[in-house]
Every structure is written in C-alpha cells, then in structure tokens.
Image 1 (cartoon, rainbow, N blue to C red):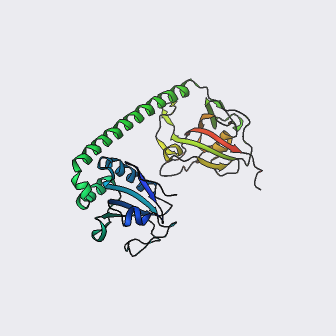
Image 2: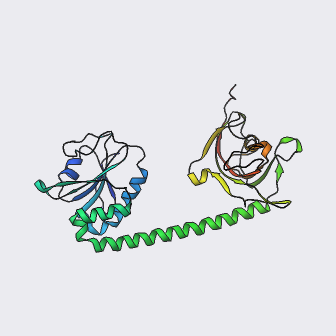
Image 3: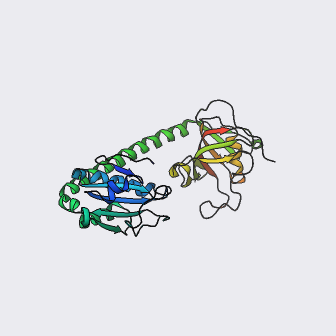
Length: 301
C-alpha cells in the first residue's frame, strides 16, 4: 500500500521512506504494527478501533501499519521484529530523541488487551485516559446500536423470506416423478440456464428438513452449513459430480439471479449413510440457494 498522511482517528500506512520520520524518530507516541500482506484483516480492524478511541488525544499518539514484506526497515531500530514473521508484530514507540524507547507488545491483538498496555507505557494515553474511556463508551454504544439494527434487519429479512417460502409452489425439477428434488422459486432470475460444465457461483444455506409427523415445515430445521455466514460464495462446475446430485439437478433449472429453495431427498443428497456428524442417515435436506453467476464451459471428459 502507498504511504498515507496521518488523520485523527485513522490508521496511518507507513512505507520504507516514511518509517523513520513518522515513527522511529517521531516526537509523538506511535503504536506500530509490522505485518505481512496476508492474514492481517482482523488485527487491522482492531487497530482501526484503537485509533478511533484514541482520537480525543489528537496527534500525541498515532496508530500505524508497516508491510515488512514489501518494505525494507532498519532492523537495528526494531531488533525484535523478524522481517519474515507470519503474525503481526506490534510495538509502541515513546519518548523523544535519545529518550526514544521501543516497547514490544506480546499479548493478543485485541482492544481489551491493547488499551491497558498503552495506558501503562504511553504517557499520552495515561495522561488522557479519561477522554479515552469516554471514547470507548461511545464506541461500545455505537457497536451495540449497530448490532441491534443488524439483528432487527436480519429478523425482518427472515420473516420476508419465510413468507416467500410459504406462498411459493413446489415443483419437481427432475427425477422421473419420484419427488427427489423439488424447488420453490423465491426470486425469479433472468436469461438462460447453465449447461453441464458451467462454472457456477452461488450462495447457499443448508438445513436439515424439519419433519412434523406426516407433514414437513419449510426452513425450520437446523442449519448445517452456509456460505452466507462465511461471507464467501461457493464455486463449482455443474453436472460433473463435484456436488450432490440434488444440486446438479436443481441448479441446472435456475437462471442468473434466481433464488430458490431446493428440497432434496437422501437419494439425491448424502444417501443412506448421511455425512456424520452434521447430516444423519437418510436425511432430507433444504437449501436456500442463489445463482449469483455462471460462465459456460465445455464439459470435462
């Protein structure tokens, strides 16, 4: 990443040409994270929160990051930092000139752990601790409000989805009338359907179908897997046995943008044995699926 100028409440990105002036020999305290380009998202999110709650202190302490894989640095100034480290390594610089000190942080990179470390070793944080505490309270209140809003929106979305499922008509998509793969269209798609060999991009939520006596209740069973919860769409090639047969048959009937509920009997799912421990023997499954995109390719032989 390119170098960035410092802003109150933000994390500054340092590079080789700015590290000395903006951190090593600076005249303010700096919480500095040496990191690799990979696996840094969680720590960086924590650093953004730290910078936010330290914002009442102005420029007396700053939070910065340094990609030590992409940039050279003077290891004599940072003797405890390995250029080829895997996990982020955090240090705090305090003092001015010959009194400049380096404090290595050895705890977990969480807000709860970092703030006491900063309070103990940073004069800027210690002197403005009451302001920091007030900022923490405000930040926690914002997070609580955001979580409550997200929960409310999720509940509304779930209720709307349940109504779509209730009102949709189940149709058979294959299988010579045996009812092995049924589909309820929840949102219509557009264009053509994918062909055998197409590369499919999809979201899904898989549930065990809830049986109530002789009847079945849609979308009431426990979730056993979800690409939506992971925040990462699922990719596969259609019709080549990379997924269960119920998916190969169900997605072959869908159009781009379509969302549907697939009800898959065990014959087209995980068979008589199931897939322990999450999927029991002879389990009927439900998949809330969305065909995000696909590209046509020739089938692999």
